[in-house]
Length: 212
Image (cartoon, rainbow, N blue to C red; front, side, top):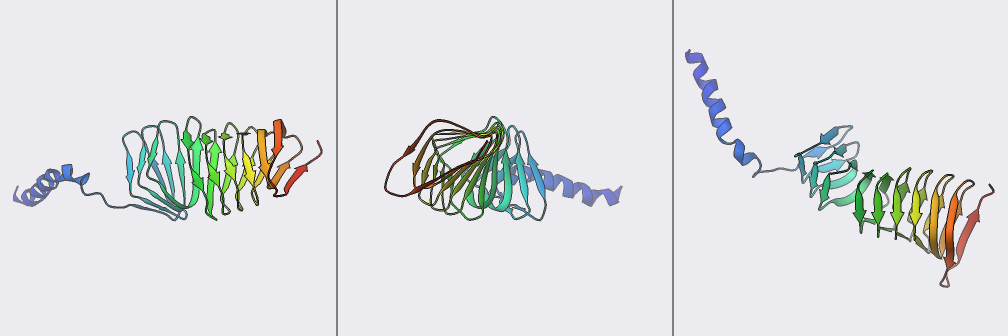
């Protein structure tokens, strides 16, 4: 039938250019309540994750050169994040995910360790880290308005708190071998603090130990 000729030609021409789709990649915008699930083989390339947007990386998913600006990026075990530009928003590391050398240093930056592990992280300038059940923070430094909160089931090891930084260990949370050079340590009732609390430097440190 002649009325099929033009549609058929269009399909054939479009299929011919499919292999070039990966070559010409354009930034993608995630925002206003949208949820994007990126699984095995999926790639978020140069995407902007804005306020209200959420990207969930499951096993085999990849975020490449993404920009996190007010939205939420959740990384599950087996996924990969490379070249992330973190301006604001929430980065969540789930069970089985390990990260090192992160810098949480913006007013609206929040790192959530929901079973994940972060080592060598620096927290400052009103950035915040929350260690929830199963999460672990180790070798972290907290300073200049940064905050670290260890919730029930979370663990913080070898944390150094400098002037104007704060570490809060909530009921059921655990902190070990804490170093205080100024800043504030708040141990709530039911929390566990093991090892030594070392005080050094001339900056005054504040220790709040709630009753059990």
